[in-house]
Length: 372
Ligand SMILES: C[S@@+](CC[C@H](N)C(=O)[O-])C[C@H]1O[C@@H](n2cnc3c(N)ncnc32)[C@H](O)[C@@H]1O
Image (spheres, helix red, strand yellow):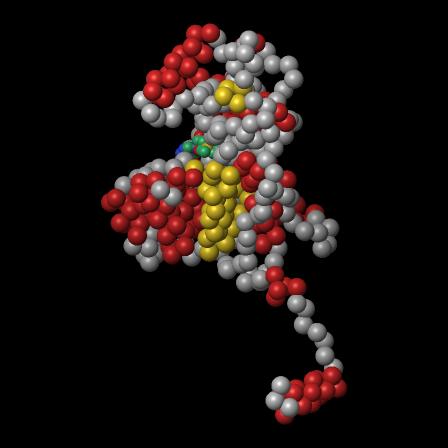
């Protein structure tokens, strides 16, 4: 039995067993799932994951340790028809340029099965293919902020045009800085799309900013403190660039700070976020658990891989509470009927009796006669 039929059978059994009137959870798929940041967020708002995919060996280990299932591998090796049907497609896909030849082809979007020709292995088109085939009610895509300016704006234009003109979705985009929910400056672009026109607004975020001290561990092993050699190297490197008039260098922070963006290369020297330990001690890197917290992961999240892999995984991930707030708004939108705007939903039509109607007509005539 194919994966798809098995999952669909499980879902229909669940639906049959649900008590009358019970709400069936919305189903989502977790593409380029990494370690499951989207999954935690959408599960927290009551959705149910029916498919996941990531080809990275170590991310799959972390995912399996936390969610009890190993994601499918390379997305190109999964037949679109084998992916179970779903209401919401989620994906934080890698940002790649489109070759110009490919772009002009993809721009002839009116064509039926416009995605069936060469795709140059571009991962965005794997997403587009899945949307084209399954037509989920909504999708949530995440990417680096500079997706908009990448390749002089061409990458974003292809993506936006494909989703809107090509696939017919209504797309909302916003750059969100996670600093209002975690002590990290991390700007990411979110694209939220709906198959049918629906009222949607991105969530509001608090004005306050949490401080780094709120996520620090109490007892940190000495191995996280920089060796004298590495610290001397980083200082010399920063000085060289300062003297040359540019701003490269390490990011020294204290408990009162908001950090720079945690990157996937934090394991190399940790230079973007170094925690000061006072005059007498070299600064230290954050521990993997602190990085997990910096990305908004709960402490129950299991870290079963090496420090190097853990740093890579958290640096590649999404900030869970940011996605969770978006997920909540998406769920609200999907629970309303298409084209509903708040006023239309809230303003229930009044039941009027025929006597009332006659009175209303009479009084409107009086108003007209008096010219008011
Ligand atoms: C930016 S990360 C997404 C991280 C994820 N959102 C999270 O919360 O951890 C992109 C992911 O795409 C995966 N990836 C890249 N190419 C892939 C492919 N061809 N098939 C499946 N996964 C792929 C990478 O392994 C990486 O984990």
